[in-house]
Image (cartoon, rainbow, N blue to C red; front, top):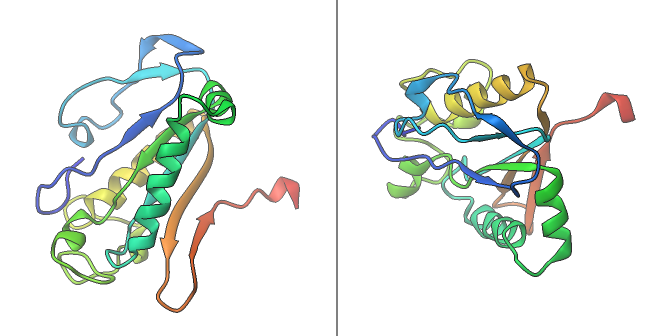
Length: 170
């Protein structure tokens, strides 16, 4: 997918080749995949990880770098087992335009992208639109196991993570 100003918003897939399906992934919305590449589909649950919805949350990028480094480790048995059990879909930077322009919390249009997850506009909030479309597609296929978003905050120390709550376990 691309940002409102045409910059790529990257989606990385990290997994092993275990449980690879015969057919490739369906491009449920071809406009979100400008390269028209149909990724490999797997018979294992998906973990969706995003970061940097607010440009000023620089620590979230460092946390994301740590997540990616860990998941792609060739020597860590935990990473190997996680790749074997899950597909990790990673959007390392949601608000690429805001980061480029040096904004703190806003996008190109001066809006906080966190306020648009319920009803994102394809033109105004294309990254949020794409992430939501991907999450809905994976949920409809009963493949989305977990979604979390890496954040940082100027009034809190360190980083924090928002994730979905499982009411079955409460």
